[in-house]
Length: 418
Image (tube, rainbow, N blue to C red):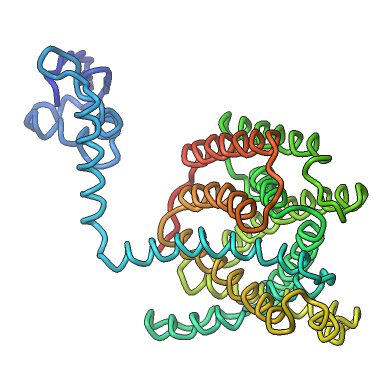
């Protein structure tokens, strides 16, 4: 603490004093009776307790050292302070925590782009059914079940009781998830993978809006700025439809893919807000096994609804005929579907683990990074068209993500309980 100025003002019953440290000024009122019986250090102690205004001011200003001839706020000192804090944060957690966090983050950054590329590859190589690729996205729910069962044993806990209200919530979320996957399937059928990924980033807009309306999450200027920026990026993509469309895709199909992608993003934002509402209203304290239970139950119901759609559309019988005409043969066809199932489920599990281990801010950062990764991978591996408009849209989208992440961290309500 710097040298401070102490000013006291006494009335007949209380004494007031102000402590000034740099730009922080704290006023404290103490009864005269306490002043007569307590030492000065005892009076100062409440100001230095965790959570006090004094402590907050010191923590916030620590990266920038006090100004003066002997304490210049150099960039090197700032880097040294950040390095020191990073080391302290690293020591506070066991090595197993960091291993799981890196593993979960890697799963998000690898599995989600791979799943998007495989969805586009399915249609590019001769697949035609939107129901089949939607079914593959949710058919990996047994992977979550295989992880959940040992979690009960390790954590020494029991499954959350399934009430009628909670079951109904899972059914609704499962139905919405099945519809969401079908909308994205239409998008990947008619749009390049890089374009579909950019448009899907608009889900952040709807997550913020539905979170504000349903869960009463905060929206600040940075989040509003992000909404405007990402909307502008979507407009840029729409203006570039001529150079971005595949030759075998009609203008009507491209427009339908564009619309279905935006609608799927809106529904994804609604699902995210409703999932948070289920945790807040029905599940209360969030723990890892509860998060896995929610993901498993929603995936199971989405799988059931999609399976019904497959049966009504006779797509199980159509898989054999699709495999015959698929570029690369039957083996390639089934490998694309199997890996679509695995990568999508691994991406969801990775995102779930990142949310639990860290925060929604880190999940937002990783979600922002995977958009350019998907676009670049699509250009390199699938020869997606990459015009100047798309590069501009990608840059603007990344800027919007940064604004959203900053706004979310400022409006954060706190970390998930462990």
